[in-house]
Length: 145
Image (cartoon, rainbow, N blue to C red; front, side, top):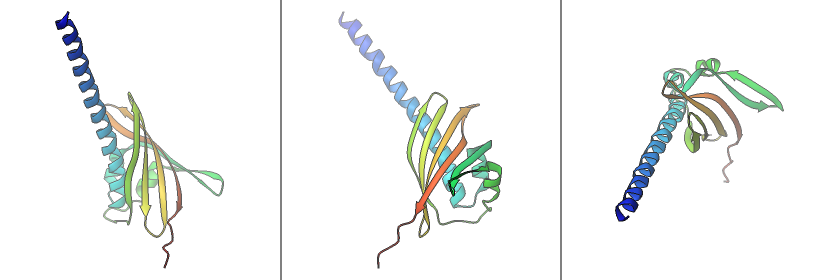
């Protein structure tokens, strides 16, 4: 009886450890994909964006109460190789189930805007890719003098 209980506990510890490691691995891979986007846009590295985004992805936002859709190819083309920008990005959250994930990031462009990006990612052929990006922004807070 004691061996059975110990075996059961041991089994659950092993399964739990495996699941935690698998979850961390997926979160790490998703984070790496989002960081390709963050670093690629900040450092003028369109090749990193091509690696992060699915070739058919689009970006969506609202301007003047209208939906504005931009192709990913157009977005990547606007990132000039070697042209650094004053962008500070960070990942706020990641959630995934099986081969689908959502992520939220904040991009600060000092003295201009703070963007909030929402990503939909899918894992196929063993790699996480951003397939959709929606975003909004607010004015950067004015400093008090």
